[in-house]
Length: 198
Image: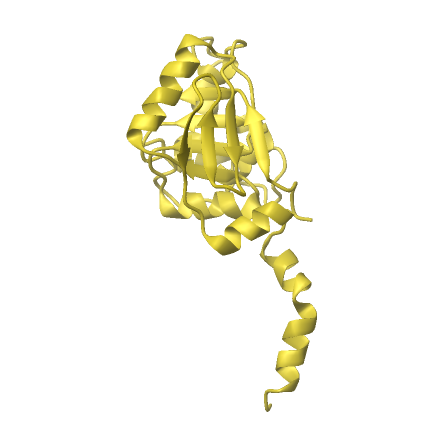
């Protein structure tokens, strides 16, 4: 499998209520030298997490010990800017398995789906409720049910459905990337090829 299967995720979350977070802020260009997906989490939001002396900034959410979890809740238009896959890699490598926002840039959204990070797009009203709940209690848990395509704020029981491409959904439920999927239908491809003239 390319990554862990995703079915139901119940976790606390890191709130990042900043709009228009682009991929250069997620992973600065100077850290794009590697071609493997490993190690990028160390530099996730690097310029926001550390000052010029490489000292962690205490006021940045990822450095705040009261927050934890496998869910990142971002502001509207999350993942805009360049199409670098490394932004999704950095989010996955840090330990996030889902990002919630009221709007995602399309390329970033697809890059996440390709590596096992679930982008959950909710309404602006529901995103606001999530931010407020976390602000009131950093231990607030969120449940994301991929099979039912539903995200639930467990403190209040409020929930909202989200959309996902059917093919990507099946891949995530099985922990497949595109190569795994093709391997799974290899015999069908071979049978089809026999029926085609060369």
